[in-house]
Length: 211
Image 1 (cartoon, rainbow, N blue to C red):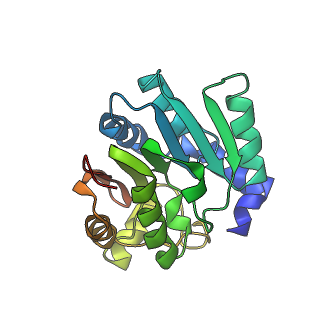
Image 2: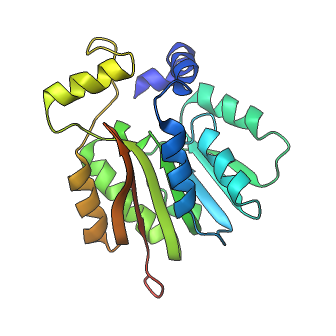
């Protein structure tokens, strides 16, 4: 994921993120899954803080922890949340465990986890479950693999990319495998709550009394 350490790559992404088709629909559906009484929210791979800001607007009594490892993104995060005492910005590489960060009522992520190797994705999902409070929710707005190359190429064309220009740090995995992982770990009410081509909201809850 070394590309994300360069200002050029980060700026190119930020310039195009608002143009991603139907993104706001996925974000709106994600907000519906965040518990109404959430008090502490973790944003995994927070980028410039777009998603966490939306969550805190929808849940104004919550506090947030924003994680990222990219220097340019961390600068954006600190600028966005400057003076906002509700938000803690933490430099963190997602290849390392998130367990030390404490407990949360919701863990959210937006187009970040797909940059990890598949084995680490599975480990991270387990850490999220452990980190959540009972009745907590995990909401992952994610870039998933298409079932066929033809569909992948159609997706790239729809967002203005080609195989030559797509992000080389992507490590895409199919949606069904990831949903099954969540169920195996112990999440309940697991589903894909929204999807457009390779963009999908995967979410589940930790049952009351589970720990």
